[in-house]
Length: 308
Image (cartoon, rainbow, N blue to C red; front, side, top):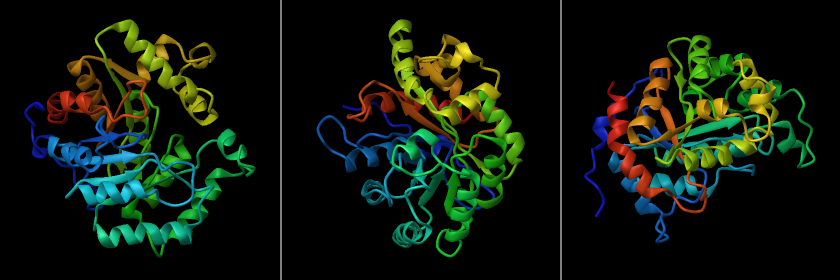
């Protein structure tokens, strides 16, 4: 039997400059939204009932909006479902905009199109040229104006220029793989109005050695991508910090680990630094199975963090 469910209202609500209701805490999960029994719709519905205000998932480096976003929307009643992110390099505004506007028509106010410029090695591995990514994003936003207005889109922004663009031409920013220091800097750049919704990886594990092992396994692939590395360097991390799978200092700053209270404390730090909404990604080392028990266990502590 699952634990007592705190209820969606405990997470509070944030009404932003544009009216999209995300709540304070969401879930970011890139794998299959299925529990060990193979159920998908039931998982999304339970996460909504537990109080998580938004469900985020990777847009994948593929054209279009993956069908699982429609399934998540259909399985729930009121939560926002967001792409984190859809790449502007493998899509065109017309076709992507048509898909997004179709989801908006079916599920009004509940689909948020997260867009990003990805990373040079990823883009160039497909034979494309990673040239002037900022210009690529601005042109893409121009092409979406008739189908996906600013309140229905967000940008995966790290640096100052992209953060400013996110504030000016979308609901706001959805940074990924960032410490609390980045959240504070992003809020200063965005100002008080736009959404700031950082992803936060967490390891719910009391054994320190095992927790750090899982955290380092999560960090290692991202430290091969120049945009993340450059962003971390700009925050004061040095060459030793970003080498390999990352120093203890870096991994501990980017990934929250420990028991429910320790993870709630880190979420509260991001909220205090200026985040409106924190997208919690539970790291277990198994991308194929949704960490259902971990999200159940975390829900009451995260509700407490949201209310601080």
